Length: 355
Image 1 (spheres, rainbow, N blue to C red):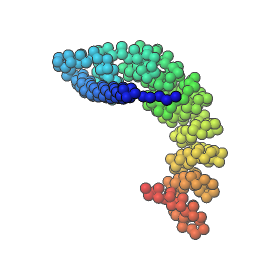
Image 2: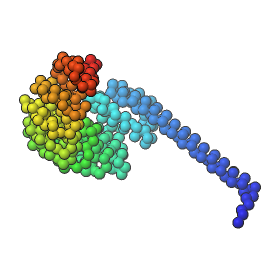
Image 3: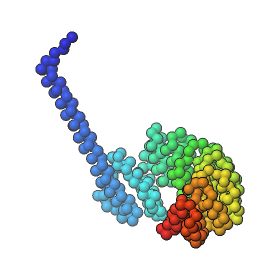
Image 4: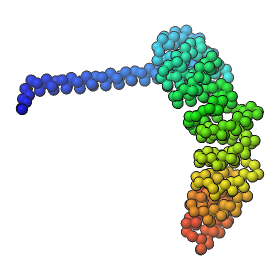
């Protein structure tokens, strides 16, 4: 069967295609213009908001025209959202009286309502934003609801709730670790550690229980906590983690043992060494480099000559350099019967010393 396309049908099809292309171009231009207006507004609004914050902090907020203009802007929801974002960001940069002035702005302009609405929203990023804003502005009434968010299944929400509770309560806010079974990212661990400024006495039992957690990220965080506050009484519990199934935990345990070292630490490193995987062995050598103990000199020379892995030989040579064994390394490198690979390893270690 043959189909014949009439000329007027072809022209009509071309016109339809051109109209569609024109509509598409108009839509793209309209969207671009809208995006530009949004960006331009945000930039100009940010200047207005920052000026308002500056005036409030220095106590010169008495221009009636500016107040009137600011009040008009506040009727715009996008402006209020940006105002809240800038306030929270500014709160992190100031302290003392300036911080109190920023907090007063938050309450004077009823931005707390915005934050509460976010906290009760369905979208995760808005809920997390609400938690962050209420915590930054020290809204104590929000603590119970934020505490409930610790069990929220959404990562962004429960992470922000953790940070908020620890910011409020310090060490006591870490109670969620008792039963926490989800990953605690490195970034989140650093945030929490930064928020804790001291640890009460008699906390060894609770901290020790976290070292026995089945959640590896909780164990790693606890080891970092022990390092930060030099909790020497937990040394034995840390040492026992050298049999942990996770190499990451073992490596953090080595760093912690080095940080709270005692007279047996180097001896224990040497005893453990042969029974550890390669990356953990390298971590032990890094700890020895920091410790600068001559107790490990013979052990290091043995690794330099006899270990099968080049990376261990290099690390051993670098620690020997730190211990002042440069003449010994030069002597080896200059001997004719020293095999070429070892000479190159020693030269590399000595070159690192020059750098």
